[in-house]
Amino acid sequence: MAGEPETGQAPEEAPEPPTVLRGAGNCANNHDAPAHAEAPQPPTTSSGAALYQFAAPPRGANDHNEPAPEELPAPPPPGTPTPRWQSGALAHAVSDPFALGPLPWLRGSETYFEDGRIIPWYADPHTPRVPPPRDKTFPTGAPRSADDVHRQIKGFTSPGAVTPGEALDFHITVDPPQQFTVDVYRIGHYNGEGAAKITTSPRLSGIVQPPPLAADRTVSCHHWWLSWRLQVPAYWNVGAYVAVLTTLDGYRSHIPFTVRDNRPADLLLLLPDVTWQAYNLYPEDGSTGASLYHAWDDEGRLLGEADAATTVSFDRPYAGAGLPLHVGHAYDVIRWAERYGYDLAYADARDLHAGTVDPTRYRGLIFPGHDEYWSANMRRTTEFARDAGTSLVFLSANTMYWQVELGPSPSGAPARLLTCRKRKGPGKSLLWREIDRPEQQLLGIQYAGRVPAPRPMIVRNAHHWLWEATGAHEGDEIEHLVAGEADRYFPRTTLPEHEERVLLAHSPYDDARGTRRHQETSLYRAPSGALVFASGTFAWSPALDRPGHVDARIQRATANLLDRICKRD
Image 1: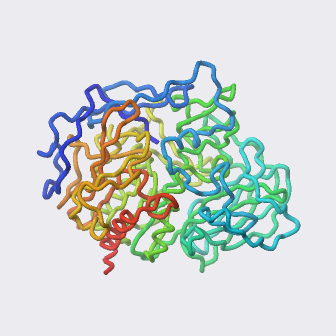
Image 2 (image 1 turned 60 degrees about the vertical axis):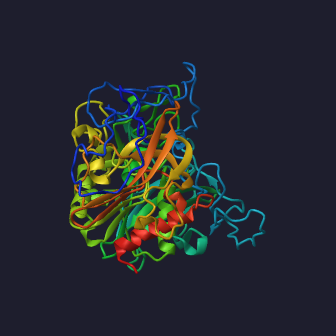
Image 3 (image 1 turned 120 degrees about the horizontal axis):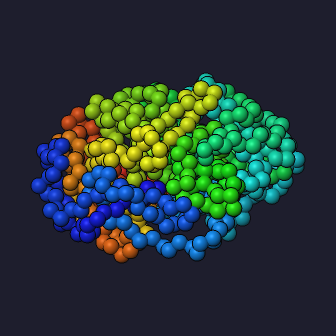
């Protein structure tokens, strides 16, 4: 989640509904721009001790039309501690109402992998279930989620995404020492179940690994011993996987990983593991853990961005139950796309950084979820792909906001440390818009602010082929589709070169202090012929396959887009 941008001017008034713009490539000040658009300033950052109060940084760093800051809830009285169990992920979930989604690995929710079998999270709770056969050695009750204080079972994998035929190393701590198993699931539609069990490890002997190492807020477990090596069979399908760790006494944790391949496919789906790690507060123990947003003080209080880490490590588990915040967005897209037969390849954002995938081999790249943190290599590779004719599909908001660096671990493993200084100390980690490379130059729109409560998306240019056969008409409201965070077109910010461009939604909402703002959805065609779509809202992905959030108009619009990219009849 980005801090709220600020400005020294009055908030921008909503312009007239947008129209199709053609042949206006690379214009910093298009003639359709409102004359009263405001001047921007850098976004705010969290204060040291207050959880939801943000303080603005010094002004004058750049000029990219940022909106005025929102007034957020007042901080608690001085000295009020944040409970030790309250994580950075939970703190930020208020800005992403879809965060993990209806996934039972969400802390305190229903069980998904119940007693070793898949239970759909939207199953009717009143429908009797036939109990599955049970291994009498294991408890008969549903596993309990591990936590970061007791570390009943926690783990991570290395080196990163793997290809079929390669090995994946699991580093796992178990306290108290006991046997455990690893069930591996692949995420997909699978007749509505959401995942399928692929394999199970033998019984493994668990040990208590050394405590995490911490230096300057950077927490790492790179010194943990190998617990299990999974040789990924050559016949496994590429995709998003989840390893479910279960102890003999019934505690459970999770590890997400990706099986990628550089085979030709229509679409390459890129899982935003860099942004996932930025939010990871492991360990959520009231003492050691740190993310790029939070850390703990000596009294167990949760601190803000000013005292957070500047470097975080991939060599550690994810906090809590072991799955990253925002993971639900990606899984929504995967389930829907696989259900309707799209030809998908998979990779992580770090693969884009490292060059282990060639995006020009695909008709389109899908960025399925919150993807806020980008390295220079990630951006360069994506822009090269667009200019070579590969289309780009961004299904969230607040994309490519922070520039980051990826470096090797102490053992030399590449791309295991993520650095984003956020104006702390020397270095080049800044907002992309602060180094004269605003996100809008790639996306067509860029981050505008948080949306306090879900609002309807207002359809614009309903005659466009994206809205074809959706049943949507000009000015129709798609309920609750503007949520979490929102992007919009900034008239005084440079646009990408384009052959044609259209804004497909223009949706007003009120920020936290009641100031009227708006969200927009963008599509443009680059000179290479590539299409670049940006939804401009967190709620697009959940509308594809999230129980309680599905919208047939968004499903059809997304299909229209992907079908055109894939040249499907």
